[in-house]
Length: 164
Image 1 (tube, rainbow, N blue to C red):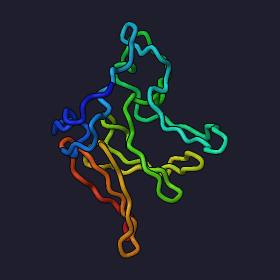
Image 2 (tube, one colour):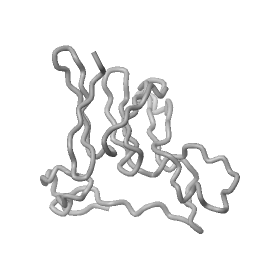
Image 3 (cartoon, rainbow, N blue to C red):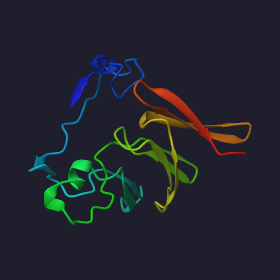
Image 4 (cartoon, rainbow, N blue to C red):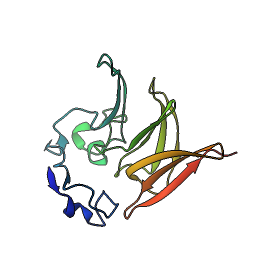
């Protein structure tokens, strides 16, 4: 769905900059279709994928977010192993050096994950004050790399670095 950009300036909207940057922007999704409360599509419901840009081959993928609670609690799935299926949320990502940084989406846990960009190996995660929103950047200052991301509604910036 596409909506006029001026309508996206609502302070409660995911695009929390408060400034119209485009005449048209992506609007809210319609959600996943369900039958008797279960998604029509098999999992993963959302995933982060890496592709070889020369061949188009998918190199690896990981689910984004945990299994939705409504799916985990559904009586028709009692006794079924529901490992991490992805929540259906959109993740914020950024590549810096050998790492791919990714959030769990606006409805997922408030964490920032780091993956090896070539293999998809999960390197680690760190808690952030609230779920990631909108964007991310990195910069160096006095030889220290910082990662800055926008979190929360309304948005605020969080800067992270490794301890010295």
